[in-house]
Amino acid sequence: MFEGTTIIAVRRGDQVAIGGDGQITLGEKTVFKATANKLRKLYSGKIIAGFAGSVADAFTLFERFEKKLAEHRGNLLRASVELAKDWRSDRVLQKLEALLLVADKEHILVISGSGEVIEPDDNIASVGSGSGYALSSARALYKHTDLSAKEIVEESLRFAAEICVFTNDHISILELEG
Image 1 (tube, rainbow, N blue to C red):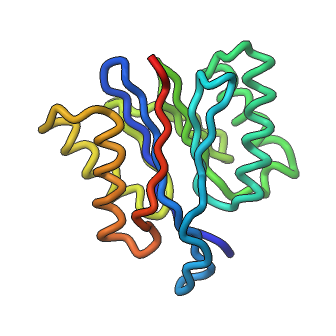
Image 2 (tube, rainbow, N blue to C red):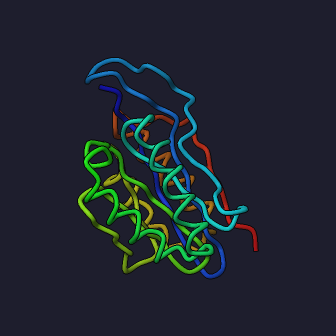
């Protein structure tokens, strides 16, 4: 099975950024690809998203999520809840192995197949193999520096890449434009 990724999103003031590494790992020992892009802009660039897990599953979820966003006129919370409901109840979707991390100017959300839609208390969320490392460093940077959201995302991914064997330093970042 293909694994290995770290995705993190940070909102600081009116800045929102999401970033991810480029590693795809086959099993526990083989780096299969180092330059994958796991991020997307959705809904005419008003929403940024990233995924951890199976690539094919994530693309299926992105397609479904884009439809939900269109149905609910870009309302991130409503579209996320509706996707989670479908994901949990649909027999085909239930088999999908991925997590989505999505953000707009007001919200950062983690969406899972178990029906979870979680909004972090501290404007920082992370998913994937190295998420604990990225989340810890992002929280420290957020609390103890004046770095921008983008800078926190980049540095936290670099820290995760130094520690987690499933995270590399080929970093992609998307920002929501002001």
